[in-house]
Length: 121
Image 1 (tube, helix red, strand yellow):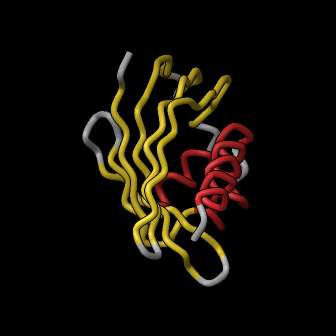
Image 2: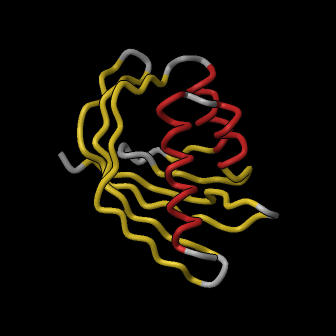
């Protein structure tokens, strides 16, 4: 696995999030994904996709910075800061969040198998 491949996958993921592209997210997220939200809730792929399908999750602005990629055998761990503006279920989201995502090769594609997010500011 190459760092460039992981960076491209991250760009694809962030673009899908910005556009609420459920079809792309279905491909990028692993079926057994677990993701810890800033409030401590653990969500699944199905929960995440339903947030986009229902229109509850709306992203107005998203910009990534300070990305670190570590490759460990067939897995990649990405740490990235994301400036985010939008809303979830009509509640505003506005801040800088630190994400960690775990990518694993699954067939021909990389998929997010785990992640977590904390709000920095």
